[in-house]
Image (cartoon, rainbow, N blue to C red):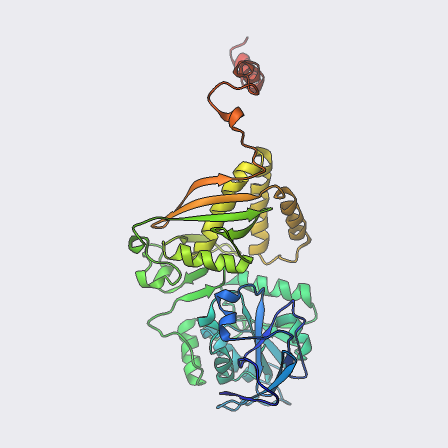
Length: 455
């Protein structure tokens, strides 16, 4: 277990170091420092979702934390010695110096640690990012990584350079081609010189049961059993479930499978109203309270989850064409989508909405296929930012037993005008003008009919 040795007056700390892309924190010579105080592990939970890709680092050497100008040296020791196989001669498949592994602590990545050491004779640095998956999935990762044989738990392509790694690795399975693409296109974009090791494309393990047996053989602690083999991925936006009985699309998901939302049948009998404030297309408040984006989404996940909002059971098409069934929970995302869509109905004209919808499909396609660093995606971002400049206002939604319905929307930039839209007479819209418009609008149909009738 990790131990802390104070070399100066202590400040609140934990045994996992905290790196954020905006803090200027880096790992140098097996040490890490950062300029702001970490009060407790709770900071890495939903209340700290102001984080944008934060990560953790630990190793069996020294970690330095700068905290209010005071330094604590963490001397980390492991109950299990890390033994790197044949550093000079390499492993069964070749020799690599050091590999940075995208590490979740789940079954696949847990067994990849000893497999990399055995097959490539390398040190393994485990990378974990806080993407809003929650404190439960982050807790204990240091111990898991070291128990599996890792030498460090660390931020990815940048850290690969800092720790002197010559390769990176991920735990995507053979049939998850889209995940291979996402990881590796990102690697190519950020550092095309790195080698990539994808164990599922190399090893003899055929499935999760084989992986469990391999883990047992190498004394690797894993969080699943043969009786419960769901593949789950969680982040701030959603939780996905695959595998087990879901592999038959005819099977109804079990009630106890869901983790973010209650069964709509068990949700409160009284509906709840929630008001979402939006400025220039971006959500900024819930029920009048200003919140940073990630904290806002975390709160909506909690509110929506208790009403059974955002459950989606769907059969999808993977990148290579095969069908895949997945069940998703995205309470906050469902609420935000409904709110944004309704506000845009006030602030955007018909043609703009149509173009936006068509580009949204392409945007989703690019991101899904791992092309985040594509120039087209960046250009589309600029377009979306421009057309949503007037999308400011608020939307009130009613949440009730799995459903989201709109009860009201308002905006200072609304294109809706009662004096035009009213069924009562108005000065701007003259109903007599409709006759000429209809004749012109229907001209192509009249010409076609005249041709058919020989007129």
